[in-house]
Length: 94
Image 1 (cartoon, rainbow, N blue to C red):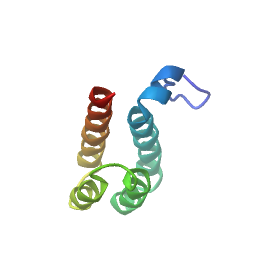
Image 2 (image 1 turned 135 degrees about the horizontal axis):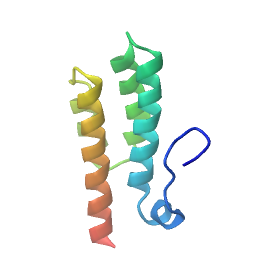
Image 3 (image 1 turned 30 degrees about the horizontal axis):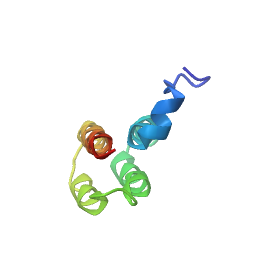
Image 4 (image 1 turned 90 degrees about the horizontal axis):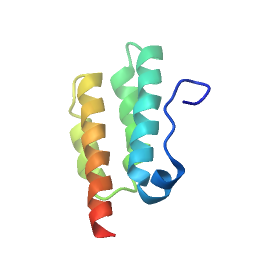
């Protein structure tokens, strides 16, 4: 764990599975935003999710789906599924 209580990943996983790193950073970041911006959390999360997903395969469709969610829990689940799928797909391709 780092000084902020976030779990750290082994160095080799960052090199070979960047989507897992992105997922961990994004879900941690959004958790902090959800706690800070209680009323505006869905809007804030959508903006940050767009930044992290814009260069990923299938990112446009993912952003469309994320923008239709109603709760922070739905957003977090979708983020985890999306980035886990990308990491698995890229792992199989190498």
